[in-house]
Image (tube, rainbow, N blue to C red):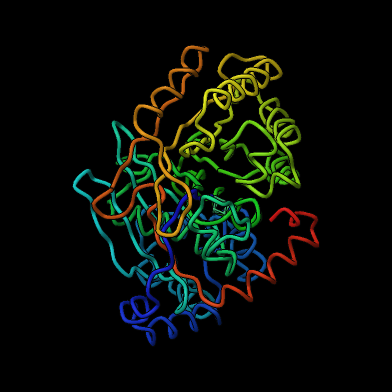
Length: 408
Ligand code: SF4
């Protein structure tokens, strides 16, 4: 769930940098064998028991090698017997996304361009801050939801990322940072706020988030893994049934007419239904808050009546959840990208909007721009999508069939 991303990068860049042949060869190997990155603990244990005829604690050993020690060669997993190592080499592979380049900003922000296949690449960004390090992870190549202020939307939709490609982003970043789960934590938070709508790729995202939270994975607390959605109402309920991660909602407008213009999904699931789903999500567990993201766009949604509408909406949410500050707001100044019709409000207008919320007793931090010098600020990320017209059409058709997409 990104907000405003820059347009597609040059395809030649990926082809050259990856070495298309290497990538094809690696992908071909991964295609013929089972990629261990696709498994969370439960499914890996099943794979060991049912497919390999092994005890399930072996799966746990393998997870530690991969996610704690960043070992991908079964031959180096020395606490596994020789026969098991040979069996694994025959049947499985540990195939991570291919690192095309990495860049570090002077403020410590880090960006990696990762090749998912010879035609598609996505960016993953790490943002260090006082006592924490947050990784922004993508769930799809492109996106079909067509939010009007989002550069990813201009790229169309290509495909969902697999579990391996989602957790692979975390693995590449964690390895690069020298992160040691439970000991030397460089990576303390993951936000599913990169390219794509995570709830439109439900199973793969849920499985990847399970590895993020598993002690044998990255050991992150539930509240430190955040899923951000444009508001796929039925899937928010489904998420509440199977997971306990933090929920963020891209709201961007307090009124239906304006929100439907900015986030077309709102035509399918208007604000009242979305807020009902958020209330249900929060009420599942005492003390749960929901974050509402609000991208501020000049003369579009940054006026006093919008601030008043937002206060009213979120106060009502607090009342229904029966918890003060159950609704948290993140204000995100719009980051312009080429071709957009939207603009960033002046600093003064941003402060005035924030003040209106503060005066109503709401905490509403303004997200700082980070990684400007490496184009890693929110809204400046690039991805690469091929065949996007045809695939977008197919994906929209599928969404339509599942009842989501006249909005999309
Ligand atoms: S849901 Fe898709 S189109 Fe909308 S902001 Fe997120 S990535 Fe962009």
